[in-house]
Amino acid sequence: MALDKVSNYPGGLCDRAATPSGNLPPDPMGLSKMAFLDPTRNIVFFTDFVADLAGIPIATSGLAAAGAATPWVLTVTEAGAGDASSAIADVNGGAITFLNDAADNDLISVQSRSESFLWSASKRLYFECRFKVLEVIQSDVYLGLVIRDTSLVASAPSDGFYFVSADAAATMAFKVVKNSTASTLAALTLVADTYVTLAFLYDPDTALFRVYVNDALVGTLASTNAVDDEELAITFAIQNGEAVANSMTIDWLFVALER
Picture 1 (cartoon, rainbow, N blue to C red):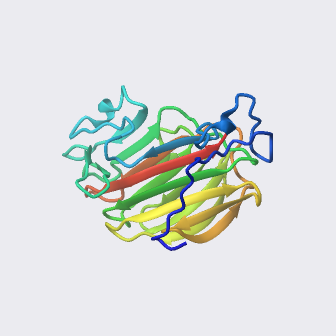
Picture 2 (picture 1 turned 45 degrees about the vertical axis):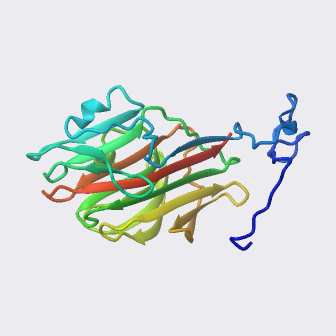
Picture 3 (picture 1 turned 180 degrees about the vertical axis):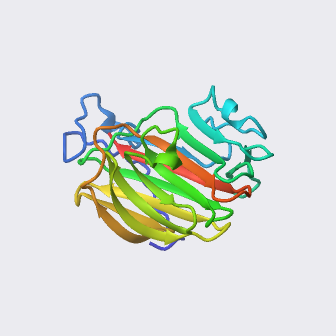
């Protein structure tokens, strides 16, 4: 469809069927008569760090303590002479920057306090994040849905669906992990201080995880090692690979899971 063409539906749109059909639920309360999409069909998290920070703390120092009364669990290692920090970036569309202290293995790990996403073989799951890392070789980076783990980088998550870049390499892989048994897809090579959009979609029709980089499909993984017995938390982390402060900037985070 051409970008200058607009389809108008004066009567509105609704995705709730009047009678059960496929994955659509029954409609005993008459929502199918309303002119809007059913907000109960998906569990959704989204933030683009403009007006809504989703409760993520902003702090020039004491970052771990600042997260204590928020919806997030922050694990911070500060062995360097400075301070780990978070700040809103002055960029179009909003972004948040996490800056590590300046010692090797200094770390900022952020996980949602609630583990709110439980994968099922019959439900679609989608994750998307646009981000950049200042130094992509001397760093460990994690992004995705992971079981609660305060030693995320040191021990590697036992369960989850996540993108990971290990220290000493700019390559990033996507992993599907259950009970420490993983399926892995080489996804991309990061470029220093350059935004990239990563996404994965689980499709129950094919039982595959489809992995995207900058909106292009780069591969698929079978769901053989998909964790189905643990709720997972939204997770992102960066750890220094050398005694130089490093940063991760996140433009947006989006997760959606069919109920």
